[in-house]
Image (cartoon, rainbow, N blue to C red; front, side, top):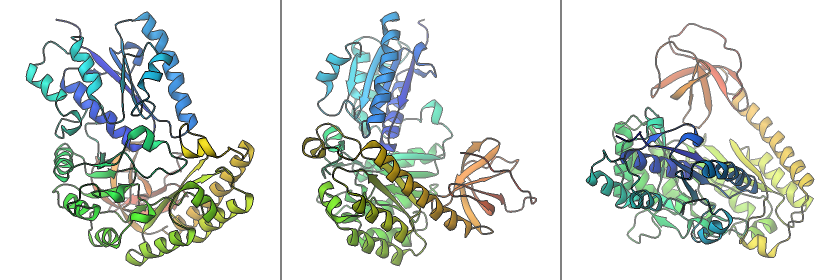
Length: 456
C-alpha cells in the first residue's frame, strides 16, 4: 500500500479565510489525506492568501518563493494558491508569475483542488468512490463533515453566512477578489452549526464582509435578526457573535434581537473607518460621523453595556492633519471597546488606487497610527480597571502557558488557574488584575491566589 498522503494549509488574513481553510481541510481528510505540520514534507501544500494589506501579500510572495525550491526538488508536490490573491479572475496572471503552482482557487472555492487531485489519481486508493464523489459534490455546501484533526476539541468556530461583497468602498479590494454578495441558505448554516456543536463547539462567529446585509439578496424576508434567533435555538450552543457590520444596515430589529437573546453576545463590530465627513465621502462609506455617533447611541440605548468594536484607517489619500484629528477626537469621545487600527495601503484595481494619489507619507501614517493606538490603550485601561473585583462569565477556550484562557460575553480576554479541565465550560471568574488587553482572576470556589501577569 502507498504511504499515507498528507496536506499542509498555511492561512493568513481574516476569519473568513480561517473558515475556508477549515472546510478544505475537512474535505482533504475526508478523501484520505492527513495533516502535516511541515510544508516541505507534505504531498499537498495550500497557501490561503490575503491581499487586504500589502504586508499580507508580501508574506504570501515570500512563502511562494520558498515553495518554488521545494517544488523543484519534489516535482510530485501539489502546490495550490487559494483566497483573495487569486480572486475571481487573477489566476491567468498568477500562473505566468508563479508557473510552479498547480492549482488556483478563488476564495471559498475548494473544488478546483479536489478536481485536480482526482484527475491525477492522487486520492488515497483505500477511500471508497462514494466518499470521493461526496467531497467533490457541492463542495462549499457539505455542512456536516468532521472537523479536521487539528481543530477537534475546538470550542470556537467561524461560520460564513454572507460570501463576497457588493458595496465597493474606494479603499477595499474585497469586492474584486471575493465577488458579489451571496447569502447562504438558512438551512445550510443551521446544519453546519449543529454539526459543529455535536463535535464540541460551544461558540460560533457568524461571518460576512457586511454581515448585517445577510438575506437582502434572498427577497423572502430572511434577515440577520431572523437567522440569529434560529441559531440561538440550537441546543448545546452557548454563545453567538457576528461580524462585520456596516453602519447603514444595523437595524433596530438586529439590536433588539441581540439585546433580548441571552446566547447572543452584546458585542457589535461596526467599522467607522474615519471620523471626518470628507474622508468618509472619499471612502464611499455612505454615512457621516454624526450618523455613526447616533448609531453608537442607538446601540447603547438597547444595550447600555454593549462592547462596541470598530475599524479605522489612518493616512487615507488626501487626509489632512485636521481631518485626522476628527478621527482622533471621535475615538476619544465614543470610548469604544476595541479599535482595529490600520494604515492605508494602496490596493490594485480599487477606486482609490486608480484615482487618488497615496500622498500621506509612511512616517506620518505611523505617527497617526501610534497616537490613536496610545489613546485607545488608555481608554481600555480605564474600562477594564472598572471591572477589578467584578465576577464575570468566561467561556473557556483553551490552556495557555499553564492557565485557562477564555472570553467574557463582551469579548474581554480572561486568564485563570484551575487544576480541572475547564475547556468548553462557562466559568464564573472574579477579576483581581486588569490590563488594557487581558485580565486575570480566580474561579468561584478556588483558593485566593495572585497570578503573575503574562504577555499575550
